[in-house]
Length: 187
Image 1 (tube, rainbow, N blue to C red):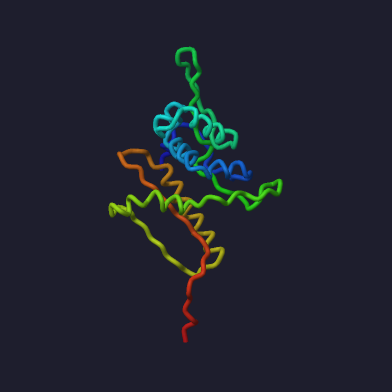
Image 2: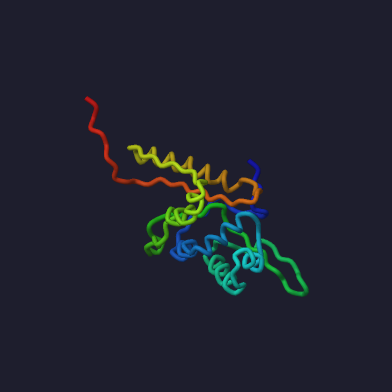
């Protein structure tokens, strides 16, 4: 599949190893900024317009993302003697690499992607436009890891899909251990 979005070069994946990086992606507005930058590079003014937020608020959140190494200036242009900066993500996919940073600090765990997806999907559910599956299976850690790798490939495919249409779709995917009843061995 062609690498259509976004309109600048970026890494495929970056491991988040510092608490500040995880805290940066744990904020709803910063997550939305990262999602917008997945489509194309944008200025703070463009982001503020899209988010319907003050430019100063958006500039603050872009700065937090930049200090965390999650966004960077990907190009500039002169507009009436002022240099306008276009920001882009540093990677298509960010993932939390470990429970602790290299310095031994605990990584923040105060966000849940499924909680966000549940909030975002409520209107689609009410409109009868929510598609979803939930399945349970007893599998080994190795099998779970293999499934996760395949799901990550699907997420990357979704991320690389050319942007078109009028509707933005959310895509939530996960794999988690849980307590679930099991049948006794067959006789």
